[in-house]
Image (tube, rainbow over all chains, first blue to last red; front, side):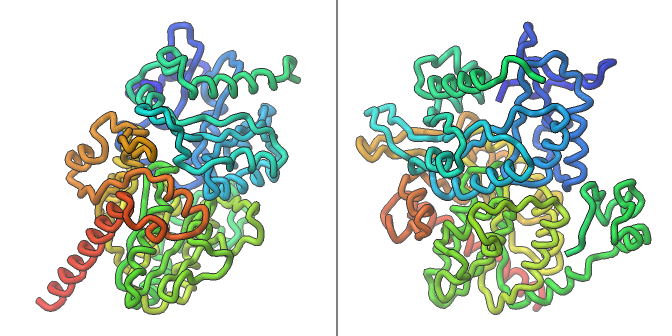
Length: 211
Length: 309
């Protein structure tokens, strides 16, 4: 999604060097995607092997001075999630952002994710409702393609902050796939406004002094 | 179910019984003796159980959120419309068991007389319960589902999987190895980010010698209910599933457009076909289901010819 496919991960004296996106080195990435010989190679690993790699991603990558480490996880409440929490626990993670789509079927699964956070002692920073409505580019009618309201309802029931709804914008998909910077090219998109607002709330919620 | 340590290397790995995390595990002696390397007796037991199951179809996806469970549910609904066909839907997404909700079940296991469902969701007492299991425990559950459920006479067993290529997928393929799976249906959405994961899924199928029935491109276009014009919510930036299927020589079973009624019906646990019989999405589903049936029938007659020749 960052147009960084094919980049290689190099060893440096402090460990693996993450892949930097820009000359200013303001965003760096690490992913198993960088370690595959071919992009279509399937990673058919059972839990223990995945856990070992996740541990390495946290402890063996030379992240350097970071303000935020954002960890993208697969769906579920299994090996990867447990391994991530175990690896990050010594570093006192700020918390979890839980993403859902509006419909009840999605919320039905995400409730379990919230339980997982509670059981593993991870603070829930808030719920984000993604794919929240689509505005027809021809007539500007907004349709709730994946139902509506589930995210806010979930946050309310679980007693966690509702951070916002992000509407669908095909230009976001296109930008991610064509390597463009969506935020620079479509600042007028309601999706951009929603994402910015959520980012702002996370920034505001970050303590200025960390222990 | 056997209790395994958190860092279990796997009973069939070279480190079985020998790793640091194996110390104190009740299965350590067994693993160290190499017993893990022998075929699991459950495979033969499952083969016996599966003798009354005519066709077995896996529904896979590379990515999450592409509509795999929705598809599995509606494949089951569509096939079950023929009262003489017995359908079973097995949900092996242990951490995210959505099938009970999509099928409108709260613990009963039969949607209709001829459509039965099994899911870990039925074993959870609360909708908030999280299944925080590592691989080996999930695998054990899948084994139990296949071996210990009394499936009876079934024409089609549809297995809904979680996204990806991990424990659940390896386990279901291994446990059904002797019982012969007809094939896999792979669900995707049109954009490259999804297709990229489908290519991995196709490679997984080829690696484990699982026949591919074909690919379904879901959320393929949206017709505005107001102005009736079509938009691409998930643009096929690299040619969509059609081009990918051509490149990889895999059948494209069909494209299902986005219809907001699909989500609404899944939320209510109803069949979308009943609510919107004339929707382009319903028509697309029916055509795809027919192609899946044709594939299964063809495989069956090929096998019968082989046996008779």
